[in-house]
Every structure is written in C-alpha cells, then in structure tokens.
Length: 487
Image (cartoon, one colour):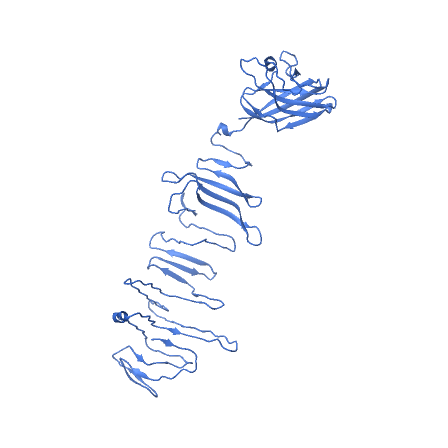
C-alpha cells in the first residue's frame, strides 16, 4: 500500500469503496458503510481507496493494525521487483510570500504505556532478515539528511542509556550522555575483561581537550605488575629491522599565531639489532631542540646499559656508584709543583742546574739556546732534577706567579725531554708552552694561567723541565703548578 499525503486543497473525494475479504457493504456514492465479519479479525483489502480522513483532522484507528505484504516465489520468478511496503511521501513547496514558520514531521510516533506487571515499551521494532541464496546487503535503517543550514542525522533525547550496540544479550557497548554533558562509552562482555575498545582509523586519531589534560585510570587491583599502562606498538606483519623506530613520544607546540606546529623535544625507541625470537635489543633516545627548529640528540640509553650524554653533565646532588668505574672511563688528574729562579743573559733559555749544585734544582743556569730547544747532553738532562711522568697524559693547566727585575720582556717556559735508554746522544727539549710578559719589577708579581698549549701530549717516561729567559743580569723568580690528566 502506498499512502501519499500533502496539503494541496484540491484532493479528490473517495470515488468508491469495495468490500474485501471479511467485509460487507461498500458503494460508489453517498455515505458508505463497511461491516467487518465477526469471524475475520483483519481487513485484508481496501481496493480503490484514495483518501482516508479529512485534511485538517486526525484519523482514528481504534483496533490493532497490521500491514502485511507478502511476495511469493512466483512473484520473484516473474522478473525484477522493487517493493516498498510503506512509503510516506511528504512534500512542502517553498511559499511565494510570508515568513511563516513550518515544523514538519514525516512520522510522529507517540507511545505511552503503563502496566502493573513487568512490561516493556518499544517505539519501533524493526526486523530485517536477509538471505545468502543470492548476493544481498541488509540494512536496518538508512538515514539521509541534507540540504538544511543544520543537518542532524539522529537526535536522541534520553535520561538513561542513549545508545546500545549489541552483538548478543551478553556482549554489547553503550553510549551514555550525563546531564553534565559527559559522554561514557562502555563495553560489556560475557568474559572477565575481554571487551576491548578499538579505534581503527584510516589516518590520525586526534584528541582535543579544552584543558589539555588526558587521564588514564586503571581500576584493576594494584600489584607489582598492575597499573595504568600505555603501549606503543609497531607491527607491520614482519620482524622489526635493525635501527628501525619502535615508537616515539613528541612534545610539540605552535611557534606563531598560524598554528605552525614545531617539535620541542622527543623520546624515541629504536631497535639496536634486527629483532627475532632471540634478539630484542633496544635503545632509547632523548632529543631536544635548539635554536630555530634544530633537533639535537641529548641522551642515549642503549641495550648494553650504557648511558651516553651528548653534552656536559651537571650533578647538583651526590653521585653514588654501586660499582667502581672502569679505569678507561675515569678522568685522573695529577698536580706537580715547579719553581725556580734565574739571572738572564738576555738571549738564551736556562734550565735547572745540575743536582750537585747547592742551589739545584731551583737555580736555572744550563743554557738550551734562544728558543730553548737546543739539544743537551744526557748528563745535563738527568742532573736537572726534572719531573718524570709515570704514565702517558695531557697537560691541562699551568698556573703560577712570577717576578722579574726591570721592565723588559721575560719568558718562563715548560719543556719535555724524552731520553732513550742506553743511548748517549744529545736530546733536544720540546716546547710545551711559553708564558711571555713585561717585567713589573722584583717587588710586583705577575700571574699566569695557561690552558692552551703548543704541545700538551706526554708519554710515559718524559721529563718535564722549566726554562727561563729574561733581560741580561736581571733576576726572575717563579712558583707554579702543572695539572696533568692521565690517559
């Protein structure tokens, strides 16, 4: 049956009423009466009926009504069919004048029911049952809403559970909006905790909060292995490759008023080797940002329990080691005092006098030439009382004080000498660093603090000596300390 209604005042009158099965009476003119046979509870046919009820009134049906449309196999065998059991077609043409408000409803269904027993109420009960005898698609409800300034597909007003999606009576999900606007999505299953919530997006999943706060709460009984958890999982169906990223947590913000998003920091996990059933090595990298969008790797924690800082490390509290640091990971410093005096000849450097001199090793009177690097005998080297290096290292700092008579240029220098066992050849000193200054007089001290050196490398067995060059007949005195970092 197709029932078409509109507000066109030119609707025609009923032209005929034909009594169908279970009815008697009918007619083509005047008042018509249809009588339902007492033995048949349903009207099966109203042939030729074009209008029921008045346009401005209600149509009252005081008995149960059933619309029963059946198509037999013969109907299907006859050819293609498109059957609509009930079609409500309501059309309103745009008025030519006025601004009257119109509130139109295609179907307005009101169900009010009360009972003293255990009852249930349903506004609409829809059963759509397809078959796999051919190829078909069954759809319970298809809603197409468009064309308005505001289009709403479904509007549900309910003080309780607004939507329930069920697979069966024991496995379902609910959507509930509270009077505060809070939305709760709940899953229920017939198992203990087997009803997951999966977001399978063909793109990104965006969470936008007005407060910038997301909370993950675990309601499971707490234990050493239970708590709120977040897992970042990489699974493309194959084993993870060496140096492939496992996951990342990024910290980002806008750098301007146009929502240009930049990353300020990130924590990334990478495979330290190709993964397999026997290998799952992983390293964790901490990245920070410097200057204009320049990413920097600040810290790496690798699969060998090694923490590598890209820059300096500042420890404001106590640093406690449960095991001793490996020797090659330690920075060992040593300090040696170097002092002396010399009366200059105005041209040459002098190193300390032989140890058999009563003023040795402080007095410097053994010449090593104008540059201080003229080769000297093994005797002068050994008798100088120089400082022998017990192991290889690097000169890191040389600091001290000096006085020189007069006002000319004076020089205090560090040299290293490398003798050879069982060899009597002369050996030339090698300059480590020279400090040059203008004399302030023997009553005023000059300070020096050298941290950059001409040649800072020292080998085990090297002998360190000091040299002095100053104005002829002028005396220079100095006291200093040298700092060495062992390799």
